[in-house]
Image 1: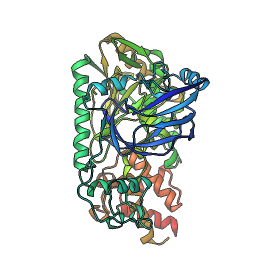
Image 2: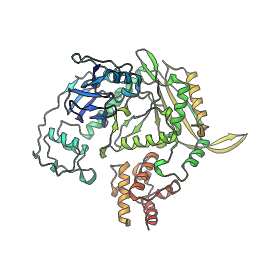
Image 3: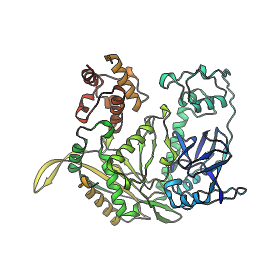
Image 4: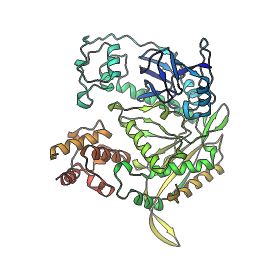
Length: 422
Length: 81
């Protein structure tokens, strides 16, 4: 039996209230598979590859690029076999991010099908209409269709066409002088955000989400100073003669240790919504990655409990590289910005002793990692020089009490004393 | 590869992780991490990009030789000769 499913503007973080559909990569009648890239979106932070979350056939494209719509707006519809939907149900949050229960719609009665807690916050942050029409360009540059010899990506060409920009007159700052998205935003009239405006919007989005979090979530904070001599020794051994591609950093060990402790204390891994806590069935750890131009993105590593330390490191290295090199046209995938069940912020690299983060709703905890520092340590009544970091935990007191939070931190500390078992 | 080519590949590898950095703003004798504001993950990605583009194997014991651009140049020129 066939069912029609809405494809909606995803919420790619607690601070996202709307997104811009830049380009469809599929057309009506196309068969798509779960994980296929179907569109390019642009958020207040960066461009994102949007993935399909079901196998099926695209039946309608309801929003045309380039348009900005609110999170949750229906962009398109896909027809799927009911069997495929059942598989999706079984996949729980591994597909739509934080789907509680997929809802189908009849083809003639489109309804919102994604019940995604992150989007609840995002929607609460905005009262803007669902679809904002793209403003017509009033400042047309010389119209010239001879753009084939110009080096530019399909997205750039599409936007240039929509805005009647002459690519041959634009100086590209990409590889080999290619025109990249940034070049277009810099010269285009008010139809597109300038870099300055984009940064201001990112700050506004972060401000709105963090203010709401601080006002609604009763945070409390604990920290522990943790000797990491054994972890450092293990890393030294593991990295011996390794190339950069396989080099492991301390943060990968911390992530694995967090995942193991969360299996023991699932009360810190999940979502607080509609006045109750719902533990997540998988451990998806978001990492706060600072962008070079300012602001942050928070992509998640999925199923960290199932990954080895080298796998965690490889994934983290890859998402960090892509997060910070948007100008090269590389993008994060929508699934990487959805479904985080807890967050880690590592400020140690910036020389900070400790960081007590603000929780990303609807998550209920965030872990802060401080810098590695040499300190005097007491062993067998003798003082020696060792290395330590400070781990901080911000937790939601509606869900977790101090005792449980302390047990979790102690469990984390113990795990990091046995790096060979991670 | 001559020295000029290696220098170009070093700058390209830096731009892989820090696209906004311009060659003429970097002091070739200073700590590359401070000059280009690289954290540990950026530094690893810089070395990975450099290994890929030069074809010269870089292992952990070699990392200190990439302290600055000039020290990296000396190391890679030596390996290339």
